[in-house]
Image (cartoon, rainbow, N blue to C red; front, side, top):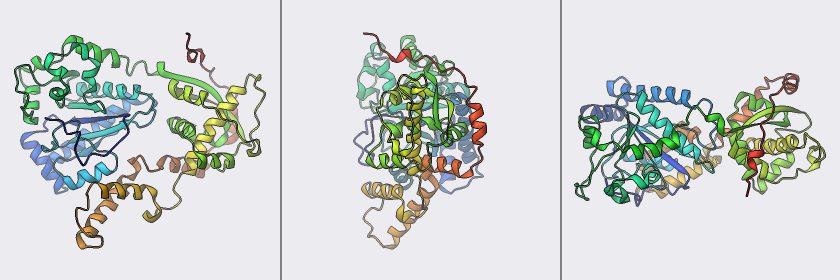
Length: 447
């Protein structure tokens, strides 16, 4: 399977992503054909469609258990069902930022599978946590085959570069030949094979399911390199956490109590603020500082360091009242202001209208579709153009919650505030009996 990174349809993305592919145990042959037919005909009652749907349910169940204590820096683990060979749907998916073929041959469509892409930002640990999850899934689900690639391609091989067989040290030869099966890494290839030989999925599954598959298992040294990266998950998730006490508006306390995972989005929103965001921080419309409480917040160490070292002096006219720098509660107040501003920024970006005409997300999605040739050469207003536009609008409406340029997080925050089902007095009482904050001396790097 030759390199296809020059695929004209591929979206230009940030480098901080990992893509992953999960192929059912019976992905090829008759069952794969049945799946494709069922998905194309939208027949939810067919055995093949039910099989892929059942895999999605099982993967989500196991992933929820595995990830329940994990704090994602940006995107969490999420998979969707994808049917190979459907160009129109592929373009719809690609334009949403969920594109990719894992370095596999573009001209040989993948069989139906589950697909996901996650951006990990400044915390590469998320990438390796997803790898740990993929190994876990292939151990728990019989016959499941997984792949993972990032902007560097076969990054699992890069991790074990010093222990690769000679042929696998060549990136062009190794691309598309790395798979995870039954909790082990497999390299489908060998020294004696022709360089130009194209690796088919029929062969991949035949080799992985066959009696001779042991010759494709990565060496103990290779497996050891990967294990050194992922072996601590999920048992030692808390090692990367940092708990501290913050003084925040009651609304922030209520939002965090309902969804602690939102702390990541708030920190990133604050640290990436612009001039428009600063206007929202001066207004503090959603989280006025007049009524605050103490809360215990769990960050990742990466997020805590980002928030701590990002300088910010709030406008006193907004209503913030900080104690002296010598006060023992000063850090709790300063960090609380920063986190509250992050939540304010997110809430200010919530959509106020459901019309696509004013939806910036739809505008970005439409422009991405157009640049990829989704409308082909059809003239705007023509019958075929209108049909394709209708399909695109329907797909966007159904999937916009998972599209990264949609301010869904802000909508969730505003929704929690609007329900107003939290008791400020109860939150104050809870703030009087909090666990002790963790020692943050780890943040000081010795020379």
